[in-house]
Structure formats: structure tokens, C-alpha cells
Image (cartoon, rainbow, N blue to C red; front, side, top):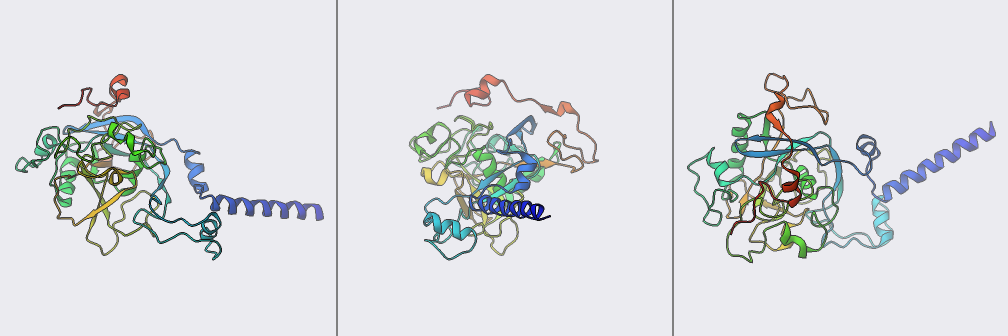
Length: 344
């Protein structure tokens, strides 16, 4: 009996130490690891759908660390560890910033995200009277000068023309897709010197946006998440992430009228184009470098597994012919979709 109690006591002690170490190192919640593995697979499922010229890529479920300590004083190691358990010792981290605290978010179900920002020609199908920005005038330039409600109404319009419920992405869905499995400042690393390969920023070429899909995609096949135009999200603005949802949904509660935009623009320096970078604007704001990219969910939640297909409005399965596989692997690996070189 005594030996049994000793074994139980040692087991409890080791379990307690394990919990403390796991929490102190800020490792993902155990239930996330059980559901999605470690590290999580995530990423594109290999399915795509096109609605009114907008190409959507299905992004698989997973989890990631959202936010950044960029520019903040994190204190020393002892202070950081003690702060995790609300203990007063060591040099504690400084005040939170708009991208903090860094926290784990679980994207519990697959969702769909447009491969590029919405272009002028795509938006014109919805609103042919929209006046194109002089800084983004071409058919394949991203639409700009759109208010948050304009973007939302476009998504509602798109929902009635395909097999998905189209909407603006949540902040966490946007960052999950932008990071594409990375933990660095940009999807490719920390050195902003590489940003010119996959984003338009800092306007070294002149005062205008550039055509979508002409820089290299991130590893999940998504374009222009760094720069070109800021992208509206569905969330209300909050000054930091204290109390933010951890399930990938948009944070719509709160008194602030401002809405979140992400990604930076062609007229911004690189620091604004980081994966964790956040902006805010009144919902009726317009801007020469302000656009959007839609996200989408299945019309029915009856099938929610990674291999489940979207359902139609009556809850039935969508014809598999509505979907098509990723494009030519050669053009995909080159980072260009459709396969074409940068236009002047």
C-alpha cells in the first residue's frame, strides 16, 4: 500500500511539474495538440472554387500563435516566467501593445479565403458605378476606396452566386493564412530585405498599387498579404488582444466603431506589412490603399470535417464539379497565378 501511494504521489508531482513547464514555455493547449497534432498540419486542403471570377482556396483547420511582441519590453526571463503565473518577481514585461499579448488561436474548421485581393474587374460585376481609384486603375489592380460596408455587401452579393457563404475574414483567419505556418515577422522570415519578392510596399516604383498575383505567393498559395492594399476584416477594433476569441471567430463585441484592416499598403514602409501588423479605420473610411479579400464558410454546417464538401442552401451536397484542384504545379511553384509575369 505504501509503495502504491509513493507511485501515485510521484506521478502527481511529475504531472504538476509538466503542467508548470508546459504553461511556462507557452506551448499550445493540450486539446489543440490532440486535435491537430504537433506541429499542426493546417494549410490548403487542395480544394478550390471560383465564384464570379474570385478564386477561393480552402484552408485546413489548425492552430497558431497570433500576435507579436514587436517593439515591446518583455522584461527578463525570470520576470517573463513569473508573469505567466502572476507572480511579482523579476523584471516584468512592459505595457501591452496593439499586437499583444501573443496567444494561441485554434481554427477549428476549414474555411475558404480568396487567393488575391478583389480586383476592379471583379468588383465591377457587383457595382459597375464604383469609381476606380487613380492609384489603382486597371482591371487587375485591387479595388480601392471601398468602405467596410461596401466590402460586406459585396460578400453578401457573392454568397448568392456560388456554393459558399462569403464574408469578410476574421483577424485570426487572416493572420493564420498570412503566416502560412511561419512564426516570423513575415511569412518568409524576419528580414524585411526579402519583402520585395512577395509584396508591394514603400512605393519605390511610383504612386500606385500593382496588379494582384504578380509577386510570389506564400507557401499556402495566397498572394499580396504583405502590402499592395490594406484589407478589411470583420472584427471591431480593440487596443490589444486581452479577452480576444481563441476560436478563430471575428471579435465583434465592444463599443468601438472602428474596424480592423490588415496587411499594409503599397504606400507604407515594411513595418506596417508584417504578418501581425494591425490597422484601424472608421467603417465609412475610404483610402487609395484600402481594399479587401473575402473569406467564406460552407452554407451548411452539417458537414464540418476537413474532407466534407460545402452544402447547398437546402443542406445537400454540392456537385463535385463545382470544385477544381489547384492549378498547374509548375505555375504554383513559381508563385504566380494565373501563370503570367509582372506587368509594367
